[in-house]
Image 1: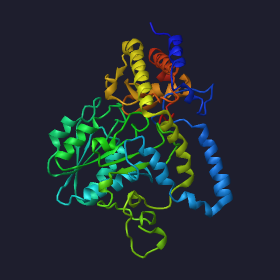
Image 2 (image 1 turned 45 degrees about the horizontal axis):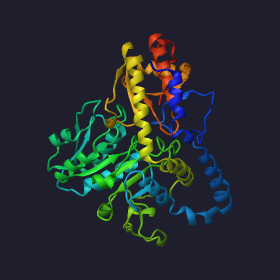
Image 3 (image 1 turned 90 degrees about the vertical axis):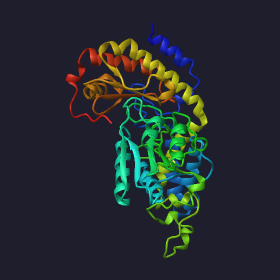
Image 4 (image 1 turned 180 degrees about the vertical axis):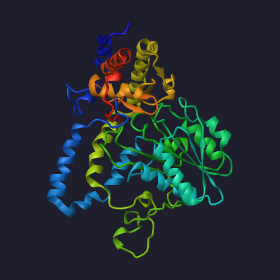
Length: 415
């Protein structure tokens, strides 16, 4: 039988264990299982922000723009190494939603005679909202494919729906609710065979699973930096445009950072030829600088090592679920095959919201909740321990066994 001591032994043998001490941790704080919503604060981020504020902004003032001007592309180059993208194809910019809107508009506009944009019923709501806005603005139709809520989008499901009227298909690589991991290569092949472009949301995938945008033939991608990349709340997002497409597409928000010669201050807009044409206005320097240490730490650890820990730890979590929570009527809302999921596990219970509230306010565990009944429990491989998983499952057991949700405050926000 599994024990907490056995979990501690796993922690002692974990090759990624030294990274945990590089985050700001409160030994008396709650067990944190919400890294797929907001990653922990790296200690080096505190030092970086202090330096940028005091030495660069405070000391150099406007002269600091000499090394700020290309900060988005330099941080984007580090992200590129995590997602199988070549130099010059990734930049930090705006929010995930804004980037999705820009790239979806650029792609769909490239097909004036194709009227359909495809997404799936379990895609993250903001993605569907943005795609609906693009479709309405361009006079096209957003078609939403019904998919299994656990298994998510598949190449076979796409093949049933895609045709020569589809301009763009847009999905999340890891489903925000179930954690299902899509087969990017197979889906790209189906879309390409129909002549459609692909646009991926990597928000729940980057920093937790290997991604190969180049090798799988992806056209476009966006993603956030504040989950497994630990970039901080509201950290700027990133976007990817396949090199061959960069000069051919036209994004809808024209700003001076996307100009071919931004300091010429021309009266008319001339788009840059490379990835810069997908920028807009003056970047948020403090938050962009703050995002780099967490991204760099993921690159240092290596995505293959991170993936090995993610698979082992989520397997351990599922084993604990089978032993402890399944007999209590909690359902598993994620794929059982570890190769088919990202780094969080979905647990389903009719009182999921109340359980999540009790865990956060009295149970000593931070999880999040997604309507109508999903408790998401995330493994962030650089700092989540096996003892964290043990303690979290024991707290959920207590919540379900004791009907603790009945005493949970109903005004607690569980993000």
